[in-house]
Image 1 (cartoon, rainbow, N blue to C red):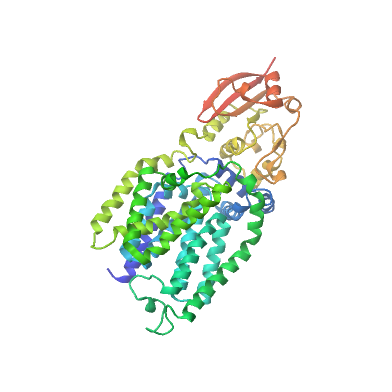
Image 2: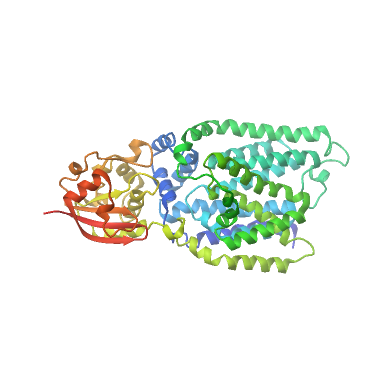
Length: 531
């Protein structure tokens, strides 16, 4: 096979496989609470979106801006919201092949990219309207550009690397832990030369043998200086975001528990979205690390150092969320690809292992397309609850949620799925409703016959966050309402008894339960005014 063709296959085949896997069943799993937050933020006008990031979710703000521009063109359907992640993950798979070819040769690059493509975790985060696929793409891009800059330093190459690092931080600040691996790589590469497959280190650096080569002070200095300047430029760009995100950390991550040693053992299965496939990946990566020697240092560092740094930090500060570390998975696949392609040539054995990994992951591939919530047994059927309301609503109906605070976003889930049935309404019209939900029509065609969120006194846009303010005197706000759709988290035979505080008192005093329709993770009840 000619060299250029082989080079294209190394990145094109993993990219295509990932793209197909990502598009397969892309709309089947309904958006879960994090994706609902993306929808709420990204469909606001830019000014309101920027105000939101000053209150909450600053670290995800740049991603929201990307999705805002995307949905302005392609709409906010489930597939449209997730397609940027599919494209980003496909790009990450392609870059995995590129980096694998550069470090270990074309067969290893192809196998690494394909292994990454068939992981259930790759499909899981490719089909999520959150930044993790974009982070993975930028982590791979930054590392590829780093190796290129170390091979042959130049201003444009270092500028490209700096831009990729800045983009990585804008996508997710914790992904900057990858820079620890890059720093060690720069120091070791500067001392001994870049581990480029298929050429000597001096030739890879574009040098004459024995002239200004590895070990020479000028060779070392140019690369170290270029890296330091590139990272410094990226940090300057990221400084405002770092400051704002630090102020929001306690509120943003108040649901995260402190890390435990057991979390490290569970990490491979969590990232691969399959305990069996995660175990296979770890075993292959360990084998590849021992076989590849010096050339395995870079991908090994890119796996171990971010995981260890985040884990150590999470012992003191709640930060440990496995999906935040998904960007390390392609590097583990690189080591696994090196193991599968190690001499003697065993292309058939490598293919067998790839097929086996794909088959072992099939049950989890199906599971991630069924539900994105975790644990999957405790997911919330927003779509089903909205369908109950849509089937039985009448003009003048109201809707009440319990609970309204926290990260469950019952209101966002119902609002999103009810809005799918509202024909002819634009994103701007839905954004107007988001500003003043209490002013929605009581069932006119412009509102798509949606029940009024009658207790809301200040909407999300006015608050510049993801929640609303509710009426302090619920009985007064419910006056004149004859039918209320009550949406309560969890399964309840008596949903009225599950509503606390003044809101529950007002509902119990003024309404009786007409029907109860439980759905997974949520109960919908129709309340009617007492005679």
